[in-house]
Image (cartoon, rainbow, N blue to C red; front, side):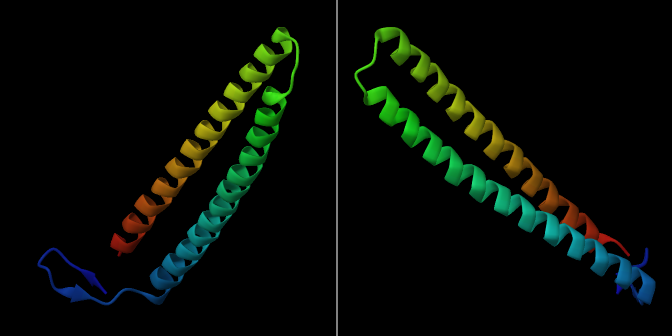
Length: 104
């Protein structure tokens, strides 16, 4: 159902409902993909940071330790950026589903 200018309900066409259903199904699939990417980034990022921390704790020359610290910082920035990107896409998905629900 949709509302006309007076607030009365009007029946929506079957093709509109079908298109809306298809759009929502596509968006749900994209959200699932984003969620999977987020999980993988978190899992592999945590493993990378554990490995880097282990390297940092080894008795290495000072120069090597500094390079490992720099790589660890870059890995952290990569995780933060990747997670932010995924969160933005999830917010876009939520916004588009709200917009889709308002369509006639």
